[in-house]
Image (tube, protein in one colour):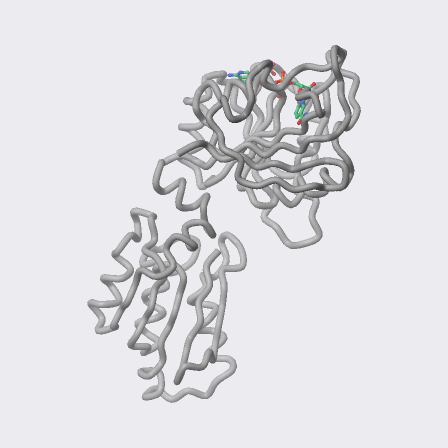
Length: 310
Ligand SMILES: NC(=O)c1ccc[n+]([C@@H]2O[C@H](COP(=O)([O-])OP(=O)(O)OC[C@H]3O[C@@H](n4cnc5c(N)ncnc54)[C@H](OP(=O)(O)O)[C@@H]3O)[C@@H](O)[C@H]2O)c1
């Protein structure tokens, strides 16, 4: 999430943001907005200041380098929130601007900007995607019924909220058992434009490709049960974040491998008692090494988000 504004005499005269992966970067959109809406002479360009939240790129990715476009525009001052952690850029964008006679200031609101693009900064810092686990739980900590008869645990409103959470992740990962028992779709059913998350299935078995999971989007199938190996392979893709939506076996395997950064729990007020399969047996989320970050009500359910204790 990157935004750019162009300022003349303390007034914003053009702006742009990065609308979606693979499309124009914020700086390009702001420069296009500037050319569309203003009659600015070449001399006036020198008096403009371009502000952008992230260091402009200087490499050829899905789009051309933003530094080239800024240099070409004639703008002589650039203010940058934070350096791009991507090793292909990290400081080189700033250097390229400076080498072309542009005054560059950087390092503003860095904490807020890291939070804004948490998954992107995480991947570039730790060389693996950010991994969140989303679970629905009964009031007594159960995941599903022992006999696998399927009923929703949480309310429709909670499930609508899950759709928005999904839209914020690059990928959704599940296991073969969940696919066989629940036949889920696991896409982001939201009423705004979204890059649908990449679906990832971990299974050692032959899978029915007619199931709902395969009805939209590509599916990456990984046959390995070595989760570190799976995540290392996924780290070499453009996936910055993964939402694990699986049952207790796979979720606990992720936890045992220390591969979980966030746990999101939708908890209902129903109990399953002896009929249920427990999420974490006698353990609490806190004892697993997570701290409560936020909690709120969704009708009779609650949504709690826990982050790994630093
Ligand atoms: N309440 C909730 O939020 C929620 C969410 C999802 C699912 N569920 C419930 O959970 C039940 C299934 O739970 P589950 O955990 O057994 O199924 P799962 O989510 O499918 O995960 C286990 C499966 O993942 C695959 N797998 C690959 N590597 C693994 C590893 N290292 N460790 C463990 N599994 C690995 C295996 O698939 P193969 O057997 O195909 O090789 C394994 O059977 C379902 O009945 C479903 O209703 C509840």
